[in-house]
Length: 265
Image 1 (cartoon, rainbow, N blue to C red):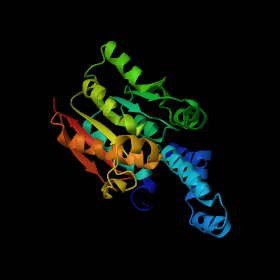
Image 2: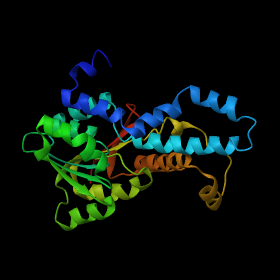
Image 3: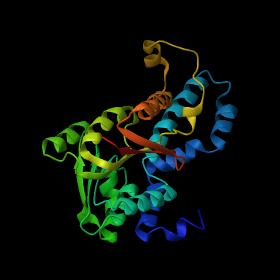
Image 4: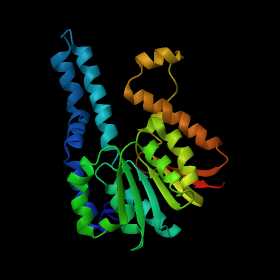
């Protein structure tokens, strides 16, 4: 990292990464994930009637915060994406899930001067409050068309507007439970020979863990926490991609796992 990645990181990207890490979501997730937290729970709440409930609530808060902070790619993954985009000579891309915009800025810097990115997110607050100043500083704001709203509806709208087959590359780092729905729309928007990249397909490595005792779907809906729901859906989505003959895939063990899908048909 210190030898090959950070010395080559664009200055605006570095500033954005540091600003993102100081964001309240990431700060809280780091606190909750610290080695002190389990010790605190054991030493201060062990004999308390609400200890198990407290620990469960903190766990749920932690995984949600982790999910949010994971929406920003690490610098080594950004470097990989930049090289990939340049090798493809990509000029038109789409991104679902923006957060503060580290991957978006990475893409904008990699595209040619006339390149265009359609960026989709439910909430523009984190992007405009944290990321946009650094994008302006880098001088690439003219490449970005930010669309705020439900990705399903916006992707459908792009198709209705005749955008089918006009994108070179798509990057998905949003609601993992809806990856399958995004996939069907992106297979129409991305050209044959283009790439679709899905982030977090290792989900902390949990997709390699064995399944627990079989339960019914209704029991899953009641008992599963957020982390486990995403883990299960990610495993199912990974299996689906592996059997989808419309794409050729490669799962890259970088960051939290990135699966590349080359559109064949």
